Length: 91
Image 1 (cartoon, rainbow, N blue to C red):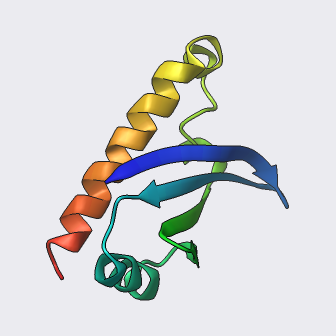
Image 2: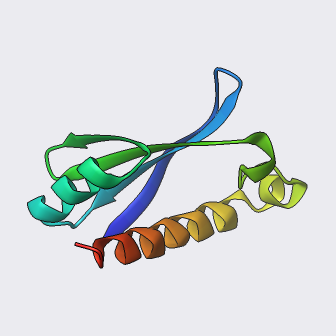
């Protein structure tokens, strides 16, 4: 599974991150699309997840994140990969 952050920022007074998830079977994509609480869409073999955050929980808000944004993005991609892997274990 490959998780990439493709967009992030502010929207309607909320913070968000958009993840693209590739490398899943069609059954895995369908399972996640049906069972995740976050907003999901499917585009071919790519699962798109849009996750909203309260301001205090948004991972890119700190001063360190602003200086080392690539590190924070990579960490967030890894964390989503681990979360989805655990979620797929329920399948």
